[in-house]
Length: 383
Image (cartoon, rainbow, N blue to C red; front, side, top):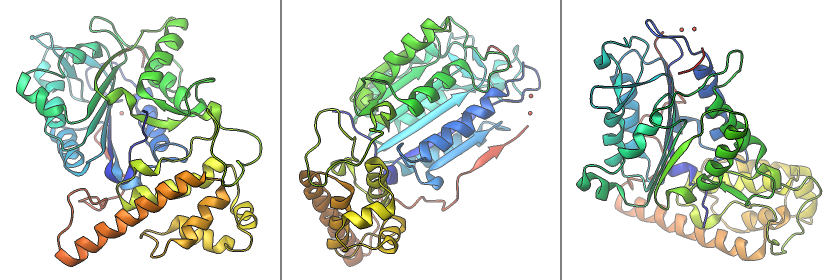
């Protein structure tokens, strides 16, 4: 079963190098970072809180990449997303390295060894790890997720999915004049526009197969993927191609197959996840706040709805949330699931209050920083 990660317990680290001192410039990598960060934080996507998305652009040294990644790996308990766009190189051991602004082709030690990132992922407490590599020879990473044996077993908590822009012997592509690289451009297009006839939410396996067909038809390098356990079932967005353009779903009626992809309350484990999914219910319904208010039979004003979906603490009582979900058209059986999730979160909050201890998966980021764009140097074609 496909599942959208809880945004409160998930993190994303987006890494990219567009400016090089000794390699060809790759301005599309910068555009990739901006677009992907906006998508992951946007409506009808994961709705990741801004502090949960870290953008590392043109890192001046290895620590500028590894430290934010370590922090995200320590904070994420649901899903950790890692993305890299830039030049990819091969070291003397036929392993993938990621180029940085100061990387020199004949001095491989000036690049970032992909295995260093892999080690951090293997020690992460996140249940799922999603890795996107948009660089030349990125397929080399597909053979590096499971060795050595002990670390691979440790990583198999839930699932891992690695999507590489090209095979281990192929270069990736950044068409001249295009806003994005070929792989990331197709990925963004798929996530934004959806797949006609596809499932309600786009899991990574579905996205991967669609990308293969799309890029192959365009004559571009064909992506490669590796799935471990349930990693391929993780979804990043609802299928926008399936969202009805017409009126709202009837209140209280169970959805028919392929109907509106309501946020799944059973996958929520944090207050942030509860609140972002609550806002997502109205967006999925296609209703304005005024329409939700009218459908609530006078129980909810637009001001009440605004306060409910923009608050930063769990609602103290259930009745307003129930009325809101019903007015949005969420099926009754799912409203019961929402209630169970709300009760569990209330119990967890009470336990924390009584014991005075904070759970490790609490959704406040340790740093308290807003989305960071860590930058070093700047000015693309194949990479």
